[in-house]
Amino acid sequence: MKKIGIIGAGISGLYIANLFKKNPKYQVSIFDKKNSLNLNEGYGVQLSTNSVKFLNEIGFNKLEKNEKFNPEKINFYSKKDQDKICELDISRFNLNDCKYTTLKRSTLINFLKKDLEDLIKTNFSVSRIEQEQEKIKLIFENKEFHECDYLIISDGVFSKSRNLVSNKKIQPKYNDTLAIRGMIPAKNIIDKKNILLFLGSNFHHVIYPVSPSGDLNLIAIMKYKLSVEEQKNYSLFSDKSFIQKILDNIPQENKEFFSNLKELKIFPVFVSDNFFEAKNKNIYFIGDAFFAFPPSFAQGASQSIEGAHELFSSIENNSNTYFFKNRVNKTKMVNNRSKLNQFAFHLSNPLIAYFRNIFLKKIVRNKKFLESYLGKIYR
Image 1 (cartoon, rainbow, N blue to C red):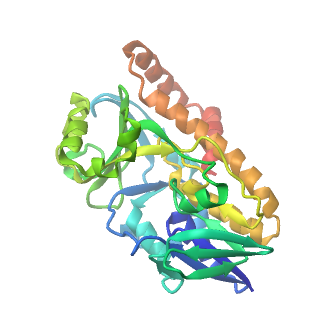
Image 2 (tube, helix red, strand yellow):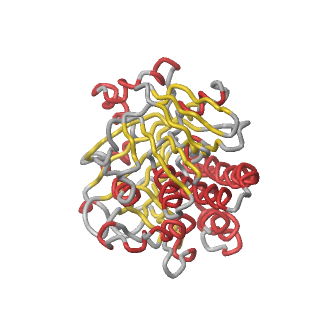
């Protein structure tokens, strides 16, 4: 029996643990540095069909209908909800049992962990990773240790474990943007059944349902410079005066959406700009520990799940030497689209934005373009 060690109990780590648990050839252990898994986060995630298909393998299609939602369109607006530019039919990429899905992140985490309770060890922060012949030894700050045959690192964009393996060669960089998250009352929104994307000057925000009834998720991305000291000051983003300063910087025409925001959270966006492959062929990275995208293509969760599925299949079929190369190719494709989207969504020149809107109206109806730009990612 092969022992699988997973560091990080986020979406990618929990998903791949479910896959390994189904196979009696593997013994799985999951380690997370937190005292408990945070299930109070009400904000949402978007899952395109590429990830829903894989989630269905572990029973996602049996999740209660009132816990998830299937929007059919992305409606593009210029600043205000009365300035609709066009709409994109995302249901065209759906399959019978694999539909574009939105839900609360906490709902997804609850689903992923429900059969893993006995495998998750919290308050386990790794301090050293030793590689002895074919075995990998994890030493934790609480003085306990664990040996495994395969180590899967999925502890996020600021992965401590990746730093230990790479000697800090790979570091995320600040994307010069802040993310503003929260929940917004459904009664204030003109369309409660689809994804609403508002484009602005150095600013855009997205509103979408996370269940058939109830509040909607809002995430905004704002261009904002931070000094190196500010980037490292985590307490800054819970400081009331700083939060008010950020809210004051929201474009006037968009402020109505933020006046009744609940569960408000502001945080800096850090992204990856390169990849790291461990010399030990039995150590792998998935999720944000592998690569973190700009949040302008809504593929963070989907790529975490897709990458985890690819890794499991590679290990299961003893073809894991190809995992890194294949994942890099797909990741580069998604990353390029994410950066292009952010650039297009944040145009500040009115004339260029005018021509962008004309272009958007045409491409959302161009089947060949949509198959290339979205189909290659969603399927």
